[in-house]
Image (cartoon, rainbow, N blue to C red; front, side, top):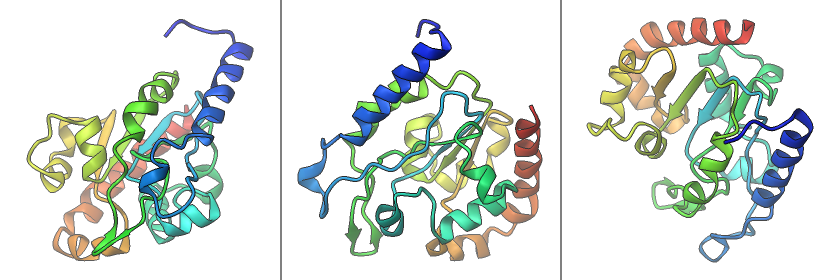
Amino acid sequence: MPRLSEARLAADVAALLADVAACRACAAHLPHEPRPVLQFDPAARILIAAQAPGRKVHETGVPFNDASGDRLRRWLGLSRDEFYDPKLVALVPMAFCYPGQGDSGDLPPRPECAPRWHAALLGRLSRLQLTLVIGSHALAYHLPDERDGLTAAVEGWRRHWPDVVPLPHPSPTNNRWFARHRWFEQELVPRLQQRVAEVRRR
């Protein structure tokens, strides 16, 4: 997109985020009123592209304000203050509203959201250095050539290093996955923490 002055960019982003906050594109499919939850500033250097808010995030309006967020922050080596600094971290999930509860956990992200908003938001990240792709739905959008599933993509993290890192979802519901793949915490997490520290210092 054309380069805008700082003042015009701030106004442009504020208007875009106001449109996101007012979005009701999937209202008919939600068990509650829409409440889009994201964190965004065009100066962010790290993009966290995850799935969709959970119930607690929907209630509080704070992304990753749950046990998943605690684990994710530990993976990244970031404090809460650093994680919630929008000039460092952008949190742009595949859908911005909690999709509701299914038979075996939260429902998938609503499909209306990403085509409607992602290009406009991601195109404004002018200082982006690191993208973390969390979960299978984000993987399909951000790394469409990874067609062998999430585990294979995470095992092959070096293919996209150091700009993009595929990750499993940090939810406690994935504890069995972490127990079966101990290499993830032993091998990838320390490298990820180093990479995040590099980006944070720039």
